[in-house]
Image (tube, rainbow, N blue to C red; front, side):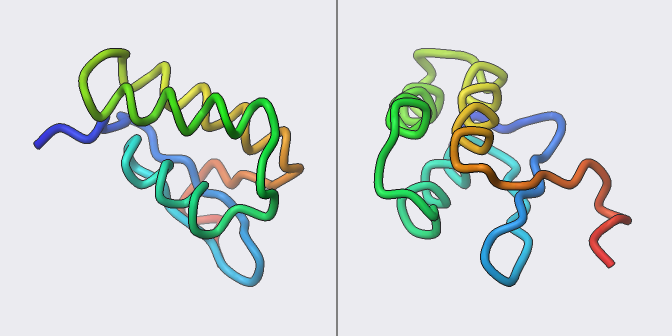
Length: 86
């Protein structure tokens, strides 16, 4: 099953750990289970866009960009390289 897989993962710094987000399903789960904000325009939009990507209604890249907007809205940090996790 396609989950809106991303060619380039997003590594988000959450409270005490890193979340490596590789697709729209991971992103939707992260925003619903671990997000530091209950709601906001970007996160609300990103959840919907990610669900649309899972259903094949929008591209995986659109979901990734929406997720990155939600990351910015929440003031979270993003790591660009897996090697920088140490």
